[in-house]
Length: 314
Image 1 (cartoon, rainbow, N blue to C red):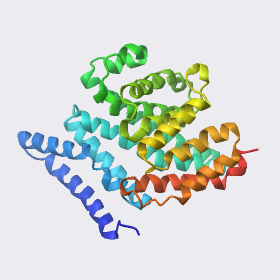
Image 2 (cartoon, rainbow, N blue to C red):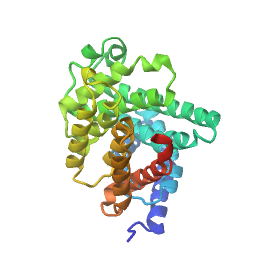
Image 3 (cartoon, one colour):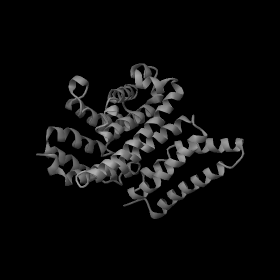
C-alpha cells in the first residue's frame, strides 16, 4: 500500500516554498543576522533533505519541485560559497536531476526525433558540467590547488584525498562522466575520460562500500566500455554487480538495470537481459521507502528497455 499521501506531497512542496520565502527574508536583513540565517539554511539544505524526494511515489511532482530546490541551493551558495556540504549536495542534486529528468527523456526520444533529442542532450551536458564545478569547488576547499591540478595532473591532484572526500569525489566523477556521455561527439570532453577514471578509482580505493555500493554501480557501466587491459572487462562488470547487490541488500534494483543495459547488450544475451528487467519490474517499489523514487524510476527505464528490445538485439 502506498504510504505517501497527497497531504505528504503538499507538505513537501510547502517546505520548499517556506525555504524560498526564508531566503527572500535573509537577503534583506542585517549582515550578522543574515549570515547566521544563511549558515543555518545551508546546513539544512545540505543535510539529508533528499529523503523528502527519495521517499515520494510521484516522479512528476518531484521533477517539478527539484529545479526550485536547486536554485535555492545556488542562491544560498552565493552568500556562503565555502560551505562544503552544500557544494557537494548541489553537485549531487544537479547530477540526479540531469539524469532522471533530462538525459533519460532525451535517450527515449532519439528514435522519434533525433534533432530534438540532441538539443535536450546538450542541456543535460550543461547541467552535468554545472554539477562538476560545484564538486570541484568542494574538493578545492580542503585541497588547495585541486581545481587546477585535476586538469593537468590527476594523480598529483588526488594524492592527498581521504575517506571524508569520497562523496565529493563520487559526485564530481559521475557529473564529469555524465557530461561526456551526454555530449558523445564532444572530443574536448571525451579527452577528459582518464580524469574521470582516476577520480572514480580513487573513490573506490578509499571507500569501496560507500553509499551502499554506489561506486560499484558506476563501474558496472564503465567497465563494460573498457577492456581488461585497461582495468575493465565483463569479469570486472560481474564483480561490481555482485558487490553492489550485496551492499544494497536487495533494496535497490538499479544494479539489475545497469547490468542489463551494459554487459547483456554487449554480449547480446537477450535471455538474461529480459530476466533481469522482469525481475526489476516484479520488485515492490514500496517495500523500502528510502529507495522508493529511485526504484520507480528504475522500473520506468526497465519498461523502456523491454519495449525496445528488438532494436537492441539482432
